[in-house]
Image (cartoon, rainbow, N blue to C red; front, side):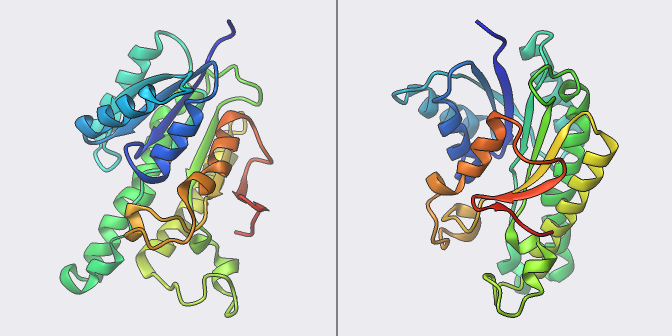
Length: 247
């Protein structure tokens, strides 16, 4: 059997991360790492996915809080130990929050700090910390980083007064995704041996938005699954289920 494709997904116990892992588990010769800060919830997700009919992947877990540097370091060491000398082929930076509704209670500055701590700083530090393992990848096209962004982070789309997200003017969340897009470009340029992209899965019904999104995550994550399984498009690019979108 050929070497399995190793894929780590942050925020994998619920929402888009969980559904991405669930769909990837149906693929043969895949080794999944479900990452999250709550070990119990991650293990519950592992049990559910592994018990599903058609699961062919090896489904593993790793405790990793993207807002805590010590936790990230320990998570990298845990993954490295479980890989036993193998590389990490794909990092899916999926963990994210949108506490915009708490501005009245916490204040705008606090909401900005909390949002950026996860959506920007967390994703950047996780990516940087896993670079050595990703650069060891022998997969076609090299190691891959998928930063899960949003069309709300596209300045071009949001500047269109008649655009698809008209009225969705979220100061902290939108700007955090724009910042993540910038981090993605920088990662790609600094590490040309890797394939680094932003992914917009669309407005899905998840806990992030109190299940208000009109799209089923089963459909939304198709673009995430496709990019996790093989190199798609260019590094660096911004992709949705409809293809490449503007920054």
